[in-house]
Length: 106
Image (cartoon, rainbow, N blue to C red):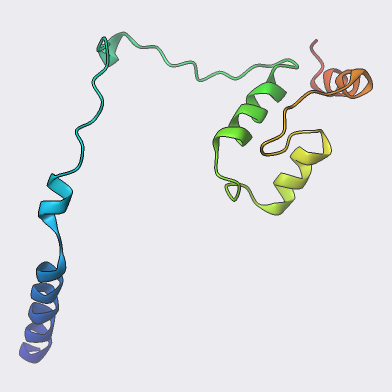
């Protein structure tokens, strides 16, 4: 047990010797914002659209997330309705009609 603790101590000291705390402290400060809003008055919108605009929300999610954020099956489902990374979501009239019918609300 004592030998194991000694090995762990040496490993921790070696890791601490290679860590660069000074480099982390020299990073640029965060950007300053024009106005700070207290979080207590912010009301996040956690309810998603229940109409054809829900597809726009999914498209925004796909565009803002990394390309590998979704599994291949989900990516394929999105692509089948015209939502792909780095491509604008602009369904034509027949596809728009299908999407509106699928949601049930125009």
